[in-house]
Length: 208
Image 1 (cartoon, rainbow, N blue to C red):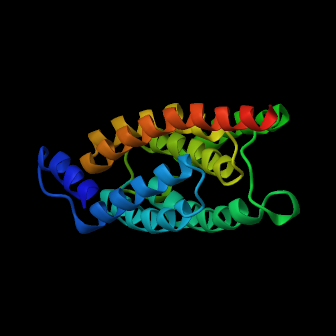
Image 2: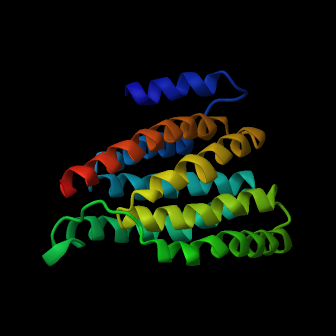
């Protein structure tokens, strides 16, 4: 109730009132990222609810890349991440946090560049209503990798959320009028920044 009221006040500062879907996506999204930071597997059902609600709003706004990202990637990978966090550890036990092997980044770095180009080009040609397509596409591509790493409990996932995703999305959503989500991503940015420290500390304590 407090979270809903707080974001209702934030949205009231801008034109129009937030829709029911915006409120659902906001509240469940906040619950999701907070529980992820705490390494609580209950984060994932909140995440599934949030991405469906948010994806619908993005589709209506014309951010097609964001809508597709939520419907066809975030929703299924949240379901897989839920299972993997619970049974992905040694002998099908709870998965622990870890760092990503450096060799994986040899795949991710070109994927960021090539993926942004192809996703942006695709949406600019297929959807007349699509706006800020390459900017939108860059957030899509970085989010794909960040969420993949998150589902595997990799510390670097939070680092990707901080800059290439959250900071960039704050500006993009403000320009497109999605002020509720822009405010939400400020909270996401702060949460991710704290999570980098907490997950790194959790890994260090296990190594001691």
